[in-house]
Image (cartoon, rainbow, N blue to C red; front, side, top):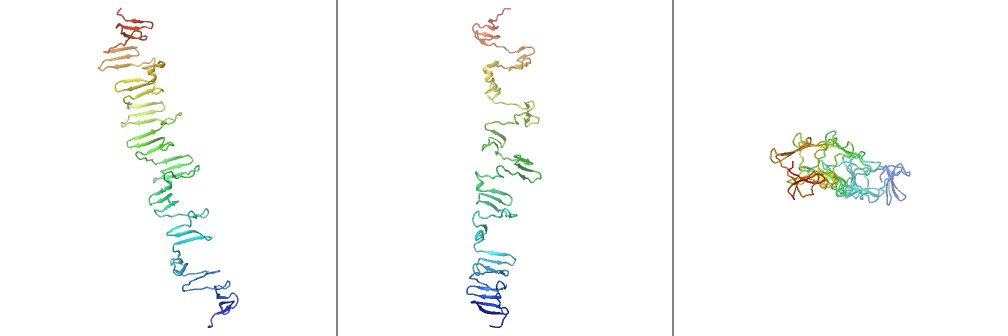
Length: 410
């Protein structure tokens, strides 16, 4: 062997290469045993540089040293020129490549895997992204990216213009809950106009609209109540605003002092309207008519069907009613009030022919109008009646004690 700075010798059955000037223990540079090749020792740091490929069919153990690969060189994990490798690229990136699946594990158990453009946990619901103390700052998704819960049960998608919330889990009986039952979330939605918004306050339990309109399309319904199709609802049916109330009633204001509402309904003619004044408690009709169709009734009183009624059957104006027709309780029709009567006039079909009553003069007047007496049988009339008796064709009257016959005695 030529004279060099490195000498070799046999030591304990191993071929040892060492510095020519140092034969001490730990000065070995390279030694070969039947199963292991040693490079350097724990006290002799040796750098090994290779310019060709190295194939290992056993283990490579590094005690305190590093492996350095030149830029663009490969560390193959499945044999030379295989598809599982670690390398650096010319742009200072490190590439770890696997043929099908790349897994990251902890404690000998695979936790995360990368396969076919998908980064996922090794098992479903098996790995958290971040922790309670180590949190990610931002999540960036491209247009069309989806946040997907349980394989499509609920999805969030931004398509470039709209945020879509969808999924089979919120169809039908599913629902979206904001906050928790007993712990709500105050929310505000802004429009494109500054100061214009609508908000929900959990404390006040109300929705506030500021510069925002609610737009309900034709035949859509604004519902009230706890019944699915609404105890009551309001809808617009092309030409009409429809109010429907199932079994209760519509109240304007509340039944309490000073809680009523003044209301006005306008016609198409300026100045014509119908109004309700809550103070004086009356309706006002300004050039507005009340029209009842044939047989419809104007009812008075609290009795079912009305204590007194007015209706027109197409030919006659009928005065009726439960109490008025029964004749109970001294029921009667009063024109005016006692001590303050009403001047009345009944016109015939001929102009200038009429009957009148003057409360001040206490007089009936007949102008070209005939007074036809009723026809009764004797004994059927009441006190003060004047009638034509059917038995003798004479005028009779009842003076309160006896029936009398009107004579021409003067």
